[in-house]
Length: 92
Picture 1 (tube, rainbow, N blue to C red):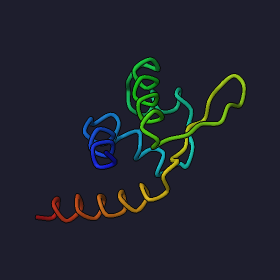
Picture 2: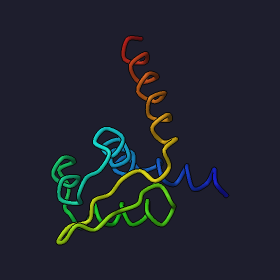
Picture 3: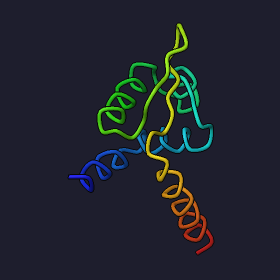
């Protein structure tokens, strides 16, 4: 079910953060993502694989690294709305 895939992709904070990084940067390596989030590359790779398997990210290899990108462009729209909601919640 597509709605279950979306819920699984954004349920975990690290996966949301990865999607948000790719929303902001358009593409990033595992190393860049891990460094930005303060997690191991192994952990970042695990989450990226799940996001890839769910169809949310794609990658291009540029030896020796893979660069990940959002494969569902509408995720950008989701994060635009998400950011607006978070900002309104911060303001109270």
